[in-house]
Length: 528
Image (spheres, rainbow, N blue to C red):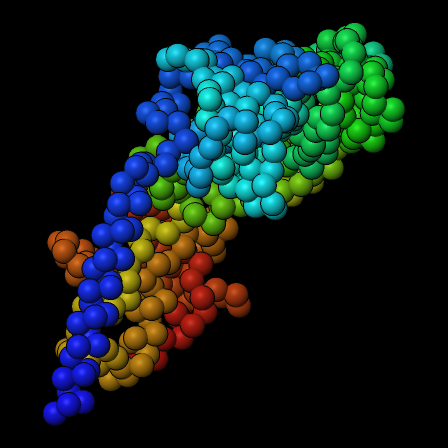
């Protein structure tokens, strides 16, 4: 009993001490503000300029500029400002928090002063570090202890504020202008894929285009010149962003100065030499530069030499008729296969083929027998080979679908052969016979499969009809149809037949078929 009373007294004493400690802590914290935001009510969108000042160093500033591609421009020194770097500074101002505050004298000597102008004026002195992870900032008459990363974010340095790779987006530029030297003068590249549009016309090999663009995209400003620079020449211009040669970089031995839209800067001598050599690529002969594929696009429509239009947007069509998918795929493959550059032929072309792409754009190929094609306006030809050339110039009638019908064999419900009807059963491969002939379900299935998509052959042998075969089809969701053909005696290479339908299912005069020999063998096996 005595022990229980003693324990209760101890617990009450501890509780009383905790209550007193809590009251004391509340009293000590009564004057501490809950909000430790560095800049209360800061609105990044209201900022119009930022200026950094350091002892013995020219000031560096940026101003909001709607005319600039990045929305900001460097005012000191002039040039294009990096919107991401400025966004990081504004984000630090908006989200910065302090740990402790003191009189302004606690910040010590200022390393830099940041002045923010917008809806009012704010000056922040970057003070001395306190240990490794914290640093003082001074605003007005108070000093604020913050994380060192926040102080670094507010003082990124002049170079970090600038666009350092002015041609980084050159691969996406709609137009590029270069001066490679020699007799070319000013060269203009445009479009995607890249094409030389002046002073001559030439579709560039994609590897050549990349070899030109990549070294230009890698030009990076690594220092700011310590004196004025003197840019010369027309330089490189990509969608209005210009970079001009400005000779050796003042105050930076081993570096080369450039100037232009992004302002003056110094790049490595090696990267500048790489950029110059890249532009020199255009001085090579056209055979070294040309795109070797006749029409490197995904064609949706081909206007053939005889004026017929082959529509490739869905199933190949020639006007109201189906086109042969195999022949259409051959044409597309020829247009996309590398060919051999050749001198421009004399005389007039025998015809032309127009290819229109899915992503827009069109290429006209002038056709020169026996094996040359020329993209219209280019100073060089491409040798595609005589076999490929014959396919490019063949009459459009030869591109019609040689299949008078295409059916799924399992939709054939009955096969009629010389008055005998074989009707499909409930199980695939099961057939019942009505009329004379033989019961051979396997042979019936094979014959149905062979006749589900027969092909017209332009050089099929003459036919003396011996047997009549009709397929009765029930398409899914469609009306029943019937297809009839008449087979003749087999030749050493084919089973000749006639069908009263033109290719593509259009009615017309009887067309000859050269069916596999097995068709005649199956017909003979079922009629014995």
